[in-house]
Image (cartoon, rainbow, N blue to C red; front, side, top):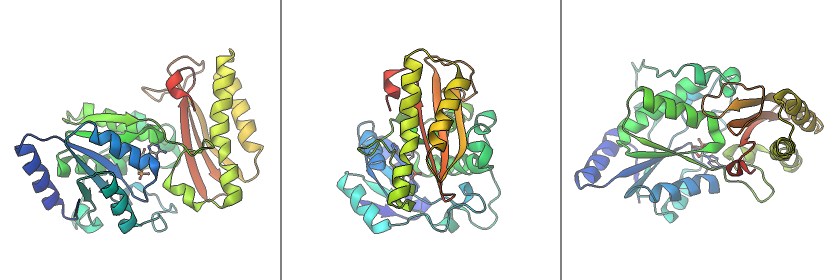
Length: 287
Ligand code: AMP
C-alpha cells in the first residue's frame, strides 16, 4: 500500500491506473478507523479495481468551538488497518497543500444543506462540498463510497455530483453499528462509560419510532413527542434535532410513509454531538 501526501502525486497515480483501463474508487474519511470505515473500504473494493482512502481532517468543515483540534488522529494505526483491507493508496494531504495561501473558492450546495445538521453547523456542508470536490478531482475517482450514517452528507454529495455534472458514481453504504446498536463513530471515543450508555438513546429512539410507525402511528408530531421524551428521560442529553424528512429531499414531512427518514442529533453532556438515522417503514431502515 502506498501513502501519498502530495495532491499532484495522487493525481499522477490515478492517471496511471486509468491509462491501463483500471477504475479507481475513493473512500473519503477523517481517519481513526472503525468497522464502519472498513466496511466502506470493502464495498469500494467490490466496485473498482483500485481503492484510494483519503485521510484528512478537513479544517473548513469545522465551526468555531467544534472539535477540530481534539479530533482523534492516529495515522500509523489507520494505515495498518487500511493495508489489511487491501487498500491501494492512503491519500493523506497536508492542510497547506489542500488550502494553500490564496485559496478562495467555496462549493456551496443549496436548500438541502439548510435542514438538519445545516441549521446547527452553519458552513459545515460548504466545507464538505468543497473538500469532496477537490478530492474527486485530485483522485480522479470513478466511484466514491459514503456512509448513510452521515445521511445528509451523502444526500448533499449526490446533489453536488448531479448539479455539477461530475462523472463519479456515488454509493451509499448502510450504517455499521456496535453489538448494542450504537452507530459506530470516531467521536464515540470521547464518551466515558456512563455517556456511552446514555448514547444508546439514539438507537433506542429509532427502534421505538419504527415500532410505533409499524403499528400505525403515522403523525410525525406524535412520533416526535415520543422520541423526544425517550431521549430526555436520560440525564445529560440535549436534543439538537428530531426530524422526520423525505429521504430524497430532506424536506420535513407531517405524515410518515415509506420515504420517511427519522434523523436525530443529540448532545451528550454538552460535549459529544452524535447523529443517527433510520427509514421508518422499510426493511432497509431496520435499526
Ligand atoms: P468520517 O471519518 O467520520 O468523516 O467518516 C468517513 C466515512 O465513513 C463517511 O462517509 C461516513 O458516513 C462513513 N461512516 C462513519 N461511520 C459510519 C458507520 N457507523 N457506518 C457506516 N459508515 C460510516
